[in-house]
Image (cartoon, rainbow, N blue to C red; front, side):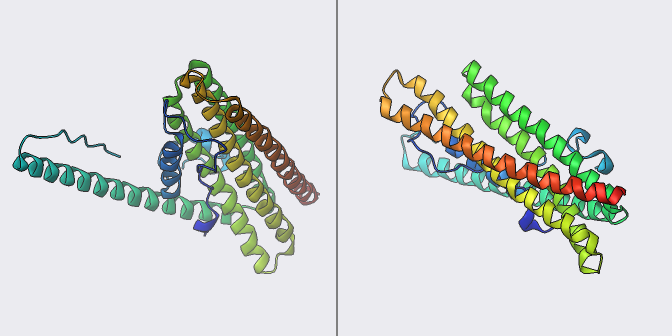
Length: 275
């Protein structure tokens, strides 16, 4: 069974190198919402076959309270607002529970399908999931470029929600393979031990890479937001943002190397398995 602790890391808001702009969108709030959605198991893209390795296919409300002229009206409006807030929170909790159950059911089915695969087939699942990850990163970067080009920063949360869901599905597949390999290793199949370790290293590096990528996006969006401030941001703030982006790109490159090293180990295991 895939461990919940090994689920895909949420695209969470990292520490920023500059204060948020008063204009545009509140990026930290937006990414916090998406992070919570990812932890609950967001349903977006869950059943779309293009986000699942081929071997495994078939698988807030805002209340605006206007000031009133009497105490009775204020109490009435407050009661209505409280009721709406409660209903919204209840529906959100029900949705999270349903998504969590769906994810658990999907992972059980995934474990069952993987249990009948040999080592070579399990590794192919990982390689296919990795190819989909590369495509999802491309979508993520192209989407950010479109957001920055259009100046429509408010469209970024939808992009982030979509790729977060895709990364989560792909991470679940790789984690399920690792769990299957570890189970076989524990039952005496030594040939699965090295593969399980390599998949673990791959997942760790991919998690760090995704977090660094999200952090770089946040800083690039903050830099774009500065353009809406009519020059109120001084050169020091802009320079700090640009330095942060360069630093994060270096970290992304480092973790990409770690990903490639883990993949090379898995290719060697696959080559040995193929004889």
